[in-house]
Image 1 (cartoon, rainbow, N blue to C red):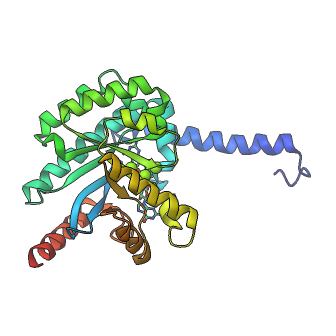
Image 2: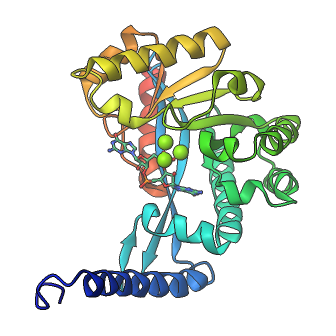
Length: 284
Ligand code: C2E
Ligand code: MG
Ligand code: MG
Ligand code: MG
């Protein structure tokens, strides 16, 4: 339509905004009922320790199976869920479902695994967030050290003092804390020292061109050294090739997650992967 009117900017922007507003309203309305209609599902992506040669954890990643829109990726609805506050009930559902799933896998004998759950800023500022995590642990019987909460730098930096207080309460429960997408935010090293975190997750944007871009290589090796010096675990995200794996291995990274090992998959498919992994590990 913008082209028809000869590039009238005002009309162009209005049309674009209406489209976006339309999609937004459509998605927001549908998202409100998604939970009740059981349209949300979790996929899981293995985290592999290449030294031990086995899967040591899973990250729970949400998907929305909408009857007409199809499979909706998180980037299309998580920001909206955060704005509208729907992330609070959705996040609570994710936490409970992921913990229940890990308990089920533990009962099948996969008891060396932990479950990583993404937590958004909006959830963390809820007054009863820590209590809700404690409740899920109590209800499911999952040992706290098997649960890892992934926070981003920006969400922690948003209100540093509050975040430090919440992280302290979470550590008292015994859960593990990870900083997701590390390197993309703006947390200073002096803050990092005050965060009671256990794991740094190197953002996939640095891993992608690791073997061809010297700057990315430098950033990754620096994060690995930083983690080692601070006594933190470190995991590389977005590992897709044997070359990336080899570079990371040579620079002391043991834990990796990415398509090279496995794409995120539904619980049923992950169960098969876990069975093969256990058989393989037993055979070695
Ligand atoms: P994230 O937590 O950093 O998750 C990693 C993302 O990278 C996932 O995208 C995963 O599918 C993708 N990925 C994994 N390995 C590779 C790889 O080798 N190559 C490439 N190109 N990508 C890879 P996904 O599932 O689309 O999730 C995107 C983001 O949505 C997540 O980033 C996280 O910030 C958010 N998210 C997902 N699930 C939840 C949730 O339950 N709650 C909240 N608050 N956010 C979530
Ligand atoms: Mg994550
Ligand atoms: Mg990430
Ligand atoms: Mg991310």
